Length: 205
Image (cartoon, rainbow, N blue to C red; front, side, top):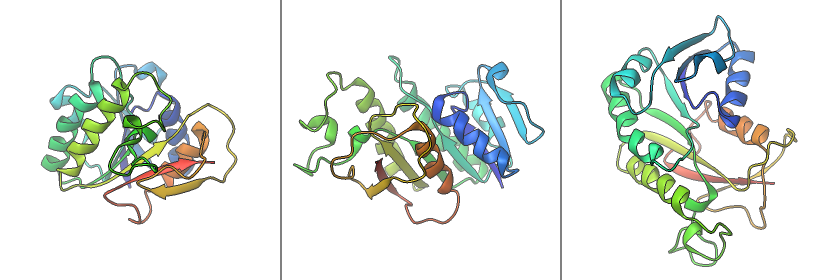
């Protein structure tokens, strides 16, 4: 298996990279900061930008699965890059993508017609990040790809506990946090099987 890991230098991405290397999986990393990538003979580092289609096209060569741990910023990088990622996947015959989202784009338990970020279940004052994640989610919905979006709630660095609760399309009841290592572990586990294809998965303790 050869995976393309986007956002490999971030908190969740770097944990996933470590897990993949422990299993001797071939990983291609597309990054603007190659000096931050853990060196390994199983890592192919490509210097580039997710907003550059040619970089994505090059990175997608020989890939079986894409894992995206890209975050949001004030420039809507997540929603701007997703159409390019989808296009490159189609061009290279890659059908499986696993991404890290946010609990804000899960359905609100109090009113399932709303997303959590649109309801009083969300404590965030700004909806900018959630709107960026929502746009990426909607693009994946329309893509015909086999996608899964892992949606953690409050995400401290924390320790790996090895247990957590998950639920399709909703945040587990009374879930308030989930550590970065446990989020990475669950995300990495999705490389096996297709239980959560075409769905969002809420994760919390």
